[in-house]
Length: 85
Image (cartoon, rainbow, N blue to C red; front, side, top):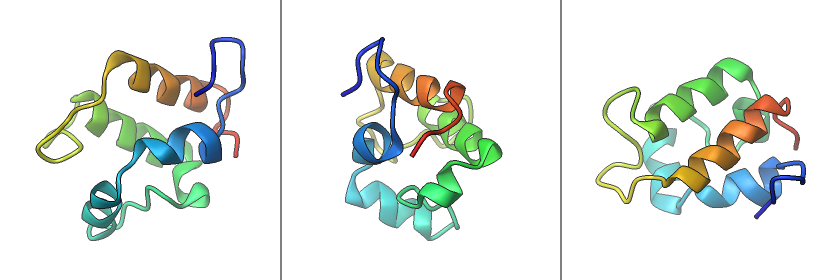
């Protein structure tokens, strides 16, 4: 996991946050959690963040366990850094 001083990357830090069940569930509705091109689009990244943070319902991942503050922070830092690969 990236530290506060490290650049957060999709491959190392973001993609591993999603379980296979999450990938399968969201793929059915067109959300490609394991596709960097899809996830690096700012509107797609914000949409995913809103679901994992609970701002949109149903909260992701379905049935939990829901992301903790550290996971949310890593995702947020990734988006703020411009969604690096």
